[in-house]
Image (cartoon, rainbow, N blue to C red; front, top):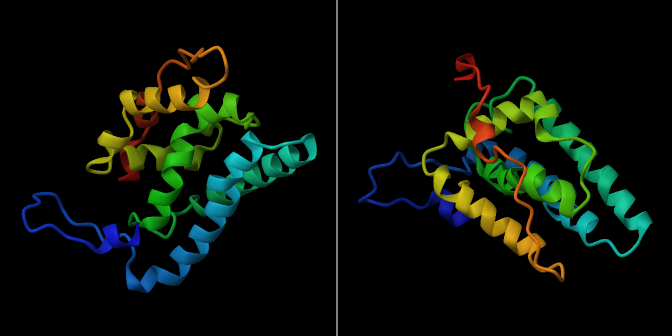
Length: 177
């Protein structure tokens, strides 16, 4: 991922975004560490736990980390300030899948993202990032659902919840930009 954040294309008409600015490297690395351990990998620890104790520990760790993200975003548009960085890109896939997939499949059902007002606004900002539509659309979400639910023995894939991923773009006040 880090290589993508520093690569550029001469033929690109899109603005090149540096996802790993040197002045934020230490903070990005620190955030990346716990995002991976407690949220990204934490979701899988809960979802594929082999016993109740393991599930409960992963569950509590996951939601404590979401509380930490919520607190960070109180006065920031993105995880390290007002610019999108590698840390935001690393967090996005797990949170994008949380309500429509992990809430049921991984039993991560303590809260929905809309119950975290700052994370919800952050999701809206992330959905507006140029190029994000290609990795956060209905087809991609359907693919995720098929992958997580379609292998459950009977092949049943949930239809809902309705409104995802479009809801991430709603209720985003213009004042956040």
